[in-house]
Amino acid sequence: MLVSLVALGLAPLALAAPAAEGCTRAFLQAQAEKYVAAQVAGKPADLTTNATVVYTQDFKTTALSAGILAKPVKVDFHRSLLDTTQCAAYVEVVAAGNTPPYVIGTQLRFGGAELGLGQIETLVTTTGDWFFNAANTLKYSKEEAWTEIPEAQRATRAAIQAAGDAYMDIFGDKTVKVPWGKPCARLEGGTYMQPDCNVGVPSGLKMTNRRYVVDEVLGAVDIFLAFAGTIPDSHLFRVEGGTIRFVHTITVMKQ
Image 1 (cartoon, rainbow, N blue to C red):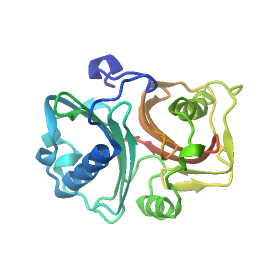
Image 2 (image 1 turned 90 degrees about the vertical axis):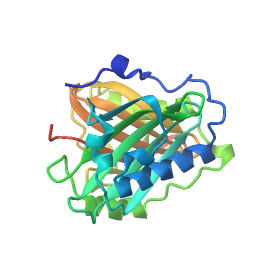
Image 3 (image 1 turned 180 degrees about the vertical axis):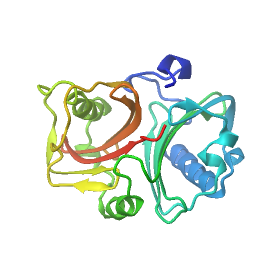
Image 4 (image 1 turned 30 degrees about the vertical axis):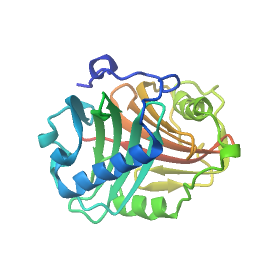
């Protein structure tokens, strides 16, 4: 059963949350690195969490000691989005050389007087999940350029989120105008599609329970959602010049 947004206390939009005092990019980057180190060690106790921290894995509430964080994982690559407005981070982890291999996406949300972790949502994919191929994910992730966008060229967080939402909305409404980039590359599981991302998009599907991490410096947004209303999914977007340049998907099929 999927955990509702209300149960998790998560807001459906990422546009208007006030910035937390002390929640800087440096703080979030350090916390993202701390999360990766905890995953490598298999020691969730190394994280600084609030007493009421909520942990979900594949949208199911789970004890930290029973989840993927309690298993040492050899991490080959990771990328982080830093959202100082919400005091949140998204971390994409590729563990192609691990046995078993994994691609993991995690949204981290911080709060309280000490800015501890209040919410950890993790999606864990491995062999048998949608188009899973960790070796390919590693290869293409390393090749892509996700450099900081010059300040004068940065889009607003509203515009970045709107681009991601348009992409998700077209699954249910083909009249939606998506700002497709030319070129655009889509890493779906381990399958790489380029130079056009407007290929093989199904129809008649609703993408519900969306929650966002937005990084204006990278021009990126990660959206956790229920694909077709039930399937745990992450869509990560890089927006350049107002159009979608890269898309990464993580879709959990084995539930």
